[in-house]
Amino acid sequence: MEKRSSIYKKFRFKIIPTVYLFLVRENQILLSRRYNTGFHDGEYSLPAGHLERNKTLTEAIIRKAKEETDVELDQKDLRLVQVMHRKETNEERANFFFLAKNWKGNPKK
Image 1 (cartoon, one colour):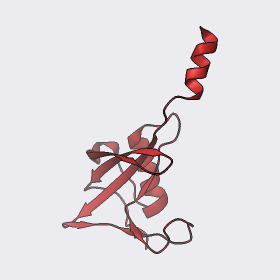
Image 2 (image 1 turned 30 degrees about the horizontal axis):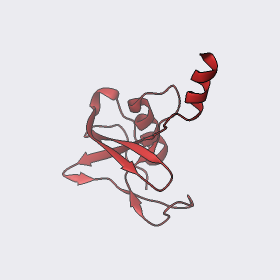
Image 3 (image 1 turned 30 degrees about the vertical axis):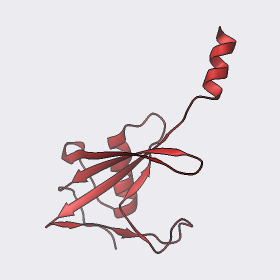
């Protein structure tokens, strides 16, 4: 039975979880422009990133907000507002969109 279980694990369906953040103030949403990433450079984007092993969705978006915008978020100020499943050519993703209206710091330019 153990051998059968390991075979199923090897071929188990996998999905990539990604978190996105709407930073909203005075009815405006903060967007960043991608630069020197090698992926969609020059385009505008929400702060976003992949979920890492052993992290929660809120831990992931708090980390990405700090890395990408230099703002500090408190988990109590985050609200999950949308979940989206999308299929791409060779992978599937689950996107989790959070909203924050309160944060500390000024977004870096």
